[in-house]
Image (cartoon, rainbow, N blue to C red; front, side, top):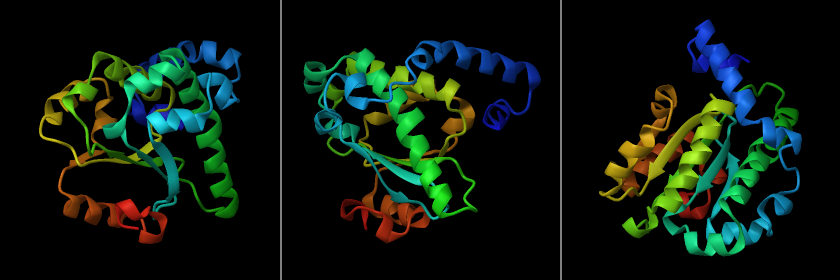
Length: 216
């Protein structure tokens, strides 16, 4: 409940409205226990899906938050559509947030009892991103997932670094930013220079917790 309170700055009517919306958005997924089987949710093995859209958790930030790395710059939309559907991707997203992410936080809490930051540090790597990848199909995936996260999982993002962003991405970012709660948007940093994002990343995450591609 406190996450919704913080997201709406403790304004009672806004909080109630947001909770009611979240209850409605998650109603269907809840009937299916938020899809505990990722393969059943996607209609394929998660490893096959991730080969088309590489993304994974890797280590923890200095504040204890798990680090999630996503590489939409090499997203293969055509490949994804061969193995799953938008509905399957959204079901898998529910699985990740309600089962995978939740379990990672609980395990870290068990090992570190003083851990209280139930949030995530996200790295979005746009290296190799081309304008052809920013299709309506790709953006619809981002928009729908963002809508779910904004309403149902507020205040779960500690910090997001968008790295290797090409120049043309600024226009796309202005569109995506409109889908995001202003408080959340304020936690997102766009950094194009490798030197700058490596330095910023090391401020947040110890080197031994990072993959070699990201300075670990």
